[in-house]
Length: 206
Image 1 (tube, helix red, strand yellow):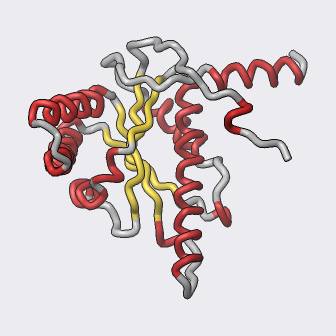
Image 2 (cartoon, rainbow, N blue to C red; image 1 turned 135 degrees about the vertical axis):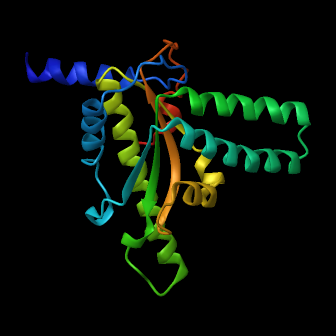
C-alpha cells in the first residue's frame, strides 16, 4: 500500500470516531486497555512534562459510590440554579446511567506539581493551562487509540464540577486535578455523524 493511500485511510479513520454512550456488557481485556493507555502517553506535552495521570476504575462498587457522591453535588448545584426537582432528577439519572453503564471509566487528571513556577499570576495561569492542554491531548489520543481497538468512548467533563469529591473518594494525591471521565467499552450503538462547522467558519488563512 502506498504512503498516499495510507494517509487517506488514516484521515478517514480519524473522521470516523464517534462519541459512544451505550455499551455492551462485555469487559475490556487488560492487554487491550494497557495498549490504549500506553498509546495515550505518546501525546505531546508542554516541556515534555507528561502531566497526565489516569485512574482506571473497574470496581463497580467504587464507581457507584463515586457516582452517588458526585450526583449529590450535581443535585445541589442544579437546585441552586432554580431547576425544577423533576428535571433535576432526570438529569442525574441520565448522567448516572452513562457513568455506570460503561465497563471502564478512566478519570483523567493533571498533575499540577510538574509545571514551572513563576512569581506573577499571569504566567502561573498560562503554565497551568499548558498542563490542561497537554492532558487534553493525551485524552484525545486515548479515545482514538480506543477507536482503533474497536472500542467506543465518550468524554465526560463532570469531574471538573466535583474535583474534591473525586480526590476524596479515590484517595488521589492533592496535586492530581481531575479533568474528565473517559468512558470506554464495546459499542452498543452506531450513531450517525453529527454536523461539523465548515472550514470557512473555523479557520482564517492569513
